[in-house]
Amino acid sequence: MSKIIWIRDLLFELIKKDLKVKYKRSILGVFWSILNPLLMMVVMSIVFSYLFRFEIKNYPVYILSGIIFWNFFSTSTNLSSFSLISNASLLKKVYFPRAILVISVVLSQFINLLYALIPLVFIMIIYKTPINLSIIFIIFPLLFLLLFTIGISLILSILSTYFTDIGYIYQIILLAWMYLTPIFYPASIVPDKYRIFLLINPIYHILTNIREIIYYGTLPAMNSLLISFIFSFFFFIFGLWFFKMNENKVIYLL
Amino acid sequence: MNEDTVIKLENVSLKFKLQKERSPSLKEFAIRLLSKKVSYINFYAIKNINIEIKKGESIGIIGRNGAGKTTLLRIIAGVYKPTEGKVFVKGKIMPIIELGAGFDMELTGKENIFINGLLLGMTKKEIEGKYDEIVEFSGLKDFINSPLRTYSSGMILRLGFSVATSLDPDIILLDEVFAVGDAEFREKCIKRMNEMKEKGTTLLFVSHDMNAIRENCEKAILLEKGEIKEYDNKETIIQWYLKKNI
Image (cartoon, each protein chain N blue to C red):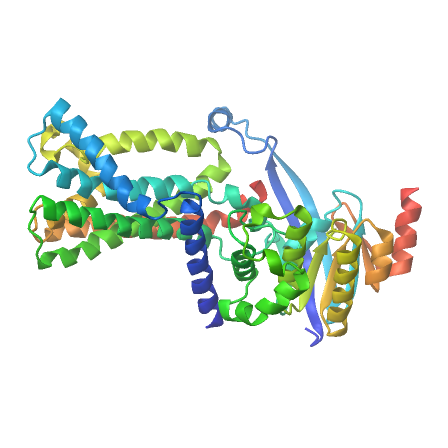
């Protein structure tokens, strides 16, 4: 019992530390979590609606409802791929459940994501996107996104300890992954022969659920919600297992 | 297991299977894997250790560089899992192997006390109860709300030692940490170590400084190439070690 309290305290304190350190030296502090997605949205809206001319209604809402969730995923996985290496001296000194280091990084980014929902609601009101009760269902794709991100982060943190290059290769993979995911463009412009790339992309399914709720104001389709659920649980469980199998081996490489 | 026993190692070995090059690039690894040239070296960092340590004993660990002293402490701390044998540890264990590991330079002394205490296995409530004592012992009361990057390395050391020893551990693992810090704080540390020994804390002490071993320990272990060469009264071991080194 006291072990559970200890893990809860430790996790809580590590998250607090991450958030504090992140904004410690900036003047606007935590407001950057709110401001950053708004500024990105402005840039993207200008680039994509004037240069590429997608015919999407309320384009800023469309962009924002994609980019903040993608940012959460990409920042978390990127940071946690280095989280074991950068805590090497600590990990070699004292034993504690090491996955906590990775999970705390993801959770502190998740709190940032919750902050970023504030400008999203703000923009939805400005563009008169209907907000109704079905918005409560956002909890499900959010949870799936969190589990998926933890899974991928656990796998990456181990792999990049075995091979330092993984951390750098992953940045390129992320870039490709971002363009293969309908974040800025509508999924409908993807030609049929390439649709397979959407269907095997868990982020695509989760984003579809999110957009159905936020952008279209409808309930998410049950089958697509189920696909997101299966994908994210699979990667979450696999990530935990993979971490467990390897954590005692990578410790010698740190 | 005897009731007084706090640490017991049974046939403990740690075999490293090392690639000849440490952490290769992915490309190299792939090439070598394809050409079946991934070669490993097997070597024992710790070999067939059997030892039983009782509550309140203080034991010095002596040996040359690379004899496996730090590795042995890490196995006892649970950081390394032995490849063979069994490790039993009873009670709260406090590794003072690298003071200040886990400190964050951007956070204040106070915030670091909490993070460090939690990482060492304390709950927040326990740390709150000990907080005043920790600050008092470190002598850093005036700086406790300043970020750690404004501290000198000696101050960081003091904070680390204060956190680790204030939390009533049953077993302390010390690895050459007295080498740093000023004379006054060193005195204070030794005094505290003695107090803890009187309270029944078990001490494992790695050092190259034979005088420090004489002052702090009753028995000593001589490690050589990962094996226990001798385990006896401290004077016998120290004489052995000094004779061999000449």
